[in-house]
Length: 333
Image 1: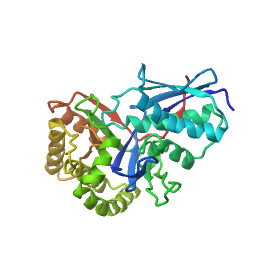
Image 2: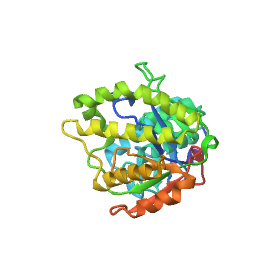
Image 3: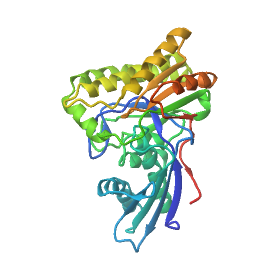
Image 4: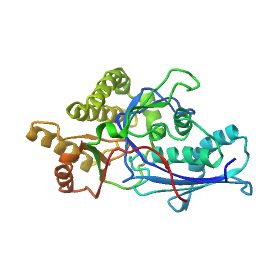
């Protein structure tokens, strides 16, 4: 065992082709594969794990406050695997903080559980490859399995019941396409009323459009891989908007309807499409996770213009401009 404590920094990822819907809730096994960009450290989660034999139970602190039972239980899914593999029994104190809004559709769970997986393994003296880390992070949050890798990442849905073939692989390193940026437009920093896990399960059970979406996703995955390989921004922008629209339409058709977008979100969608039409090219592409905050993907050469456009929209509270990130790293406590 190592010294029993470790601190890691991880970043969210933004899915260009979305993960929405689970075929196995306990193992966080997705209904479809997905592709994402790991973001730079402009938005980040810092997580410390300390295995302490004196603790009676696991403790989790998020952004300076003690977490509730459900959040602590999710963290324990990861910690229990680490304890079993490392052959230790000590409970853990986990202290985690974000420099961006939590549970607002900016993938705080992805960065949080990627950091937890890395820090807990390191603290326990457990050596894991990226595949194993990806599977471990997935136990806490599905999308976290993409944030253990940098650059452009694909999470393979897999087919095995136990999930051993459901993990992430790197499609391209950060250096492959340095000109991409994600401008995150905060339209509501509050917590969403319906969490992602609950929302996914409702959609899978009740949405007819979701079944249609699953038939369409393989083609978009193939085209997105090619767009990344060839650094084709026109294709990337069009595909990420198409897939975002598809996912949110599936949610809205659920019973009860699940609507994460607000009026400002819809303004951003309209303005991005108008900007592209005026320019005669894809200046930007929007995509929304399970929340109202926009991720507007653009190129560095257009970032200033796109940022100025977003600032003019009433309801946009704050912007984060992120480059492509290199994945988790060990940090000072």
